[in-house]
Image (cartoon, rainbow, N blue to C red; front, top):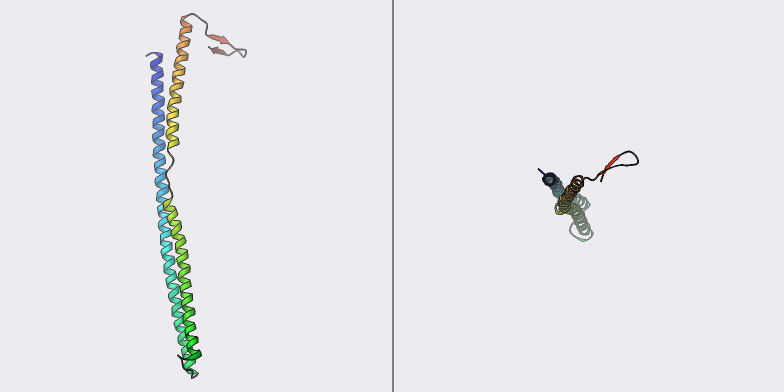
Length: 187
């Protein structure tokens, strides 16, 4: 096998090594993407559950407010009736109506607050699910191609250098020199 054959074999080995490295990087990138996506899906599921829980807590709170208002109104009615006031006329009626209005406003506020918190959680969930977890591959593919090209040029350069040295040797020329520090150099 001549120098060219050795150079071609070295180039093939370098290209194969680079290709294997690229494949390993691709597999690692895919594994990383999958792990990130799965973690994001778990987090999104937790956020969705928290949003649902938040809405349920709001409904429960509104129900408690309404139930408390019914008890307060019943106590008001009993107190008014016990004092001989007609319940559904004049000031007594105004008091009972105001109790209804205020308690319903409180219940609606509880529902609104819990809905707002749930919406924030759902927005976070949506943002997580919309995130692109792919690892850029263009740069690694480009780097692999450039590495193969650089290896090819380097191997070809080494081949040409050896070819020139052989020509010099065959022509009987001295290709060795001794530097000032005593090191031997090859032209």
